[in-house]
Image 1 (cartoon, rainbow over the protein chains, first blue to last red):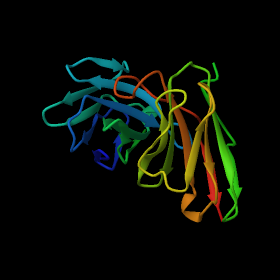
Image 2: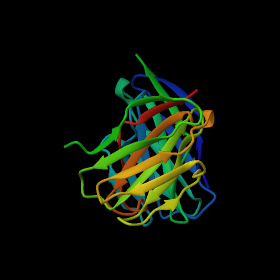
Image 3: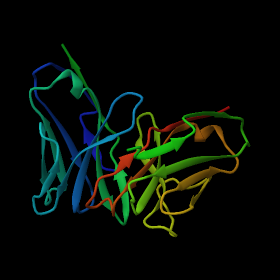
Length: 108
Length: 114
């Protein structure tokens, strides 16, 4: 039930781009993305809804392929503040499951 | 705005002891959740409450009980703590079902069972 994320970890230099993927074995109505900094609570970034509606962040974008049951998070021109662990979340059977996370580190 | 408030922030228990983790939200949200976070395993749902007066089991409910005391408060109880329950616990709330609305998380409770 838990969505699978890839990669598990990535290191970027400031200004570089990154893509984080999330896939599910279940049909999806929506996908959430959250970011968690070390020692802090996860913070909502965006929701992608079936049908294409997207709600969330200004500088981070994402795609949602309903047929493939996949979502990708795109971080462009990364900043030091982007460092953290990124989680996708999906709903299945009235429960909500988070992926295992992708650790992203941006270095100067 | 306080958002979601959890207490305590840190706790050390001995095996077999009991304790209650408290969670309160001031956003008038209907749904509340308890997750645990362990290294490499992401966030796993323990229990959730879709609305006041209802609670349901999540992925990993064994060893835990919950109470939705009112619309604001959702507590998690460990009746007889075990070392396997050492984890960081997060409470979250959402306006409606997480299918369409975002979750807001508390700051977490770091629990160690020795």
